[in-house]
Amino acid sequence: MKILLHYLKRRLPTVGIFAFFALIFAFVFWLYKFPLEAVLYPTVICLISGGIFAIIDFIAVMRRHRALSDTASILNGCVELMPEPVRVEDYDYQLLIRLLTEARQKLETEQNIRYTDMIDYYTVWAHQIKTPISSMRLTLQNEDSQLARQLSADLFRIEQYVEMVLMFLRLGSNSTDYLIRSYELDPIIRQSVKKFAGEFIARKLTLEYEPTNITTISDEKWLAFVIEQVISNALKYTPSGKIRIYAAGEQTLCIEDTGIGIAPEDLPRIFENGYTGINGRSDKRASGIGLHLCREICRRLGHRIYAESEPDRGTRIYIDVRTKKLDIE
Image 1 (cartoon, rainbow, N blue to C red):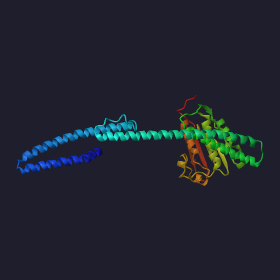
Image 2: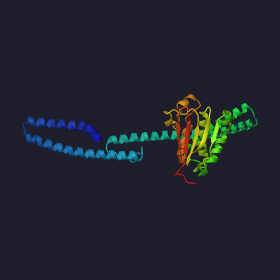
Image 3: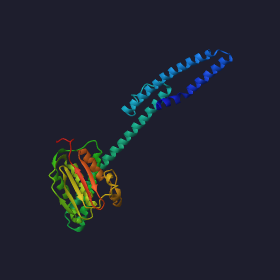
Image 4: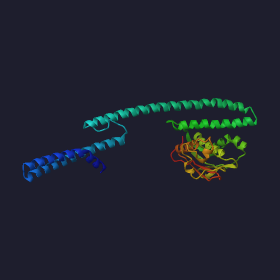
């Protein structure tokens, strides 16, 4: 109906000219005192002929419209699949479309080149920064003082941020380094917890770890990153109390803390990219990327991550490691 109204509106000048000429002929016939039938018959014949022509023209317009719509749905911006131009303005429109398509393709190519260069630069930077970090860690290992322990903790945070950058870059890459096979979850958990031992001791936080006895099909490195990120967040927002790691189901890992919790309005959005919420605004170090990366990694591994929390009563992060899409390598 919308197309028909648009067609009638576009053809309105033609209809007006036709009616004007019909009035001229009728006026001339009236001046010469022609019989009424001599005026009506040619007028009716012209109306019928004009109606048939309008129907044929409308059908042609509909065919062109469908052809253009199908082209747009098949491949956006494909000029070669457009119908053959019929009118002069059709040639002009197709020329404009070709020019716009070429300009868009050129812009996309330039953007892809810039994006690739940026990814390559930050990937090289992340790998290069690991060398001085390793050197500083070796130096601090020979020192046993409060300052050295504090510097080691800060250095560990830097390593985490660098690893987060690498994971972010790898997620945006077309290639992956997944090694999918069957793993026992407990060795991965113990390895992750061991990295935070110094922070647990320094902050006098209690760790309650109950072996899960869970076996899953996953990638060890990527799953370990998720677990470490969740533990890191638990430590960050737990000023006192304990962190508990246990199995909340047959194939579900739970990392629970007694920290400040998450506001109800923030809970549905904590896995969004860049979202920090009330807690993040009070902690200027929060980036809102960590949990987003966890969700994306879990999605790619076929796992699921979700949270439960109450303000001032702690947070529980669940990692459901069941998967039906991955094969053992």
